Image (tube, rainbow, N blue to C red; front, side, top):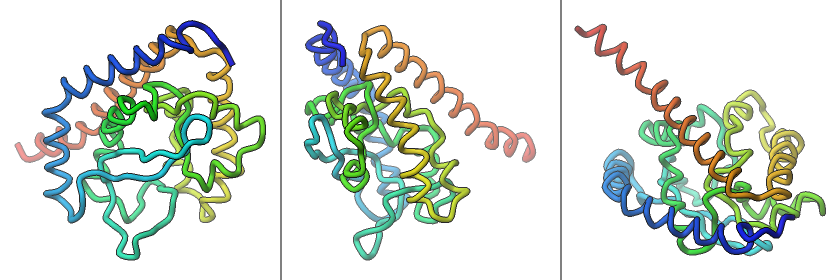
Length: 219
């Protein structure tokens, strides 16, 4: 893993400054989304789950809740496209990635970075090989090189989702993340952040098209 000034010190300050700025600027949106999550389905506005962070330390990740709460208190760990547990508003949140914004809190708490490997649940992180455990040397990120894989779409076509995830999707994601961890740099982080914003912008445009077609039909 690289040991540049940025990876040792600069990344921490970059993350903290951007996360604080983001929370301040986006606070009206965050409050509005939290309100609509509560309004459109019973349960808390936020979803919290234990994930594995840097050096294998567990932490609580924050997201906006996008699914109906399980009456049994548990459910499948993987979510595929079309999952019946996803609420109508939650579907929009997941497609637009707005559900990930509360992780700016995780960044301020020091559990996460803006850019890095996506954090796994302990059950799946426990399956890592020695080589794959290299990603635990850096903080997990809100976005990262493997975050743009269309994971939910890939899972939707398989009956045994967990086996497909562990044997195909997860190893592919980890190889991408290992390559990132071996050359962490400000330039790459900025590139990935801009790439993520662009993909979110394009997804928002796609989500608006059905609404535009509906309004034109009514006219």
